[in-house]
Image 1: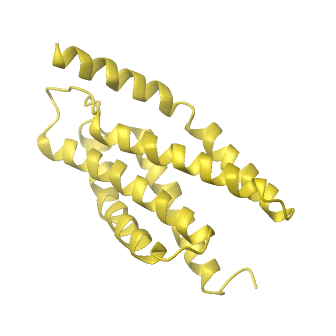
Image 2 (image 1 turned 60 degrees about the vertical axis):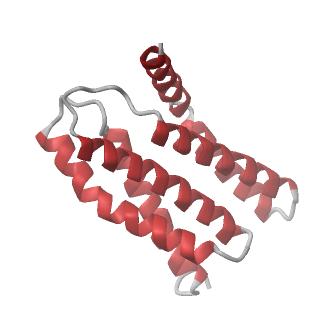
Length: 160
């Protein structure tokens, strides 16, 4: 019974993650609305990025049952999704200038940076496992790129 529930939950979370690009587009739309001096943009950004945080947390705790995958592969997948949710929370804190953004971005970003070589290794050496996917690598690279861009932007190196 429990294994069936976990398998169904994994399928439902995977179905929800298909909408990830739409949620990111909604967050970018919120940024655009926010530049027009409207308070509604803040609500849209918060809603979209909070939804991403929840989806990433669900994905971290519901991994597919794959008997070929090692415990280390499951750990890297969980680390990646938990770090992704921490980075997105740090981005929310950075955008709204709340305290605590730097520790979240540093811990989440460094964990993503450390997990990236393992993800690439598992995709290339063990493509038959379902735990590490190509979308996970893409998500990691995009989040690290946004993190680096926001770091330089907030320090005034670009965007003056």
